[in-house]
Length: 123
Image (cartoon, rainbow, N blue to C red):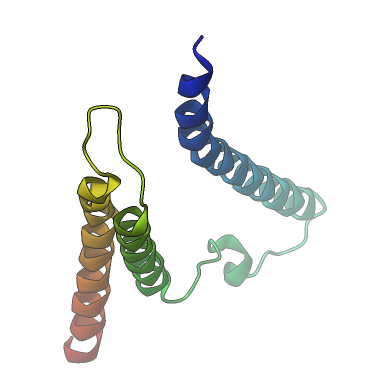
């Protein structure tokens, strides 16, 4: 394998690895929670309904939206500021559009959060 191809592989593989680690951690947390609830139920303890409801993060859509928007803007600015050129003579400035994907996804989450919040106050 060409060593120059190793860099993009590492750059693209690192986020995938991070996501897999986070998903595994959440899965283990959920399994431990269910095991604890089953042990309590086996002992005959009456479980309150609050324990049976999955814990949620308040404003998770807004938080996710802000992270994606800032990540998209950061990616766009980083690519725009890079001084290098590709092998075919194109500048790295032309890659700034890659940041539009997380930016637009974040704007979608922000719109969803705003619409859900509006429905809760009017409904």
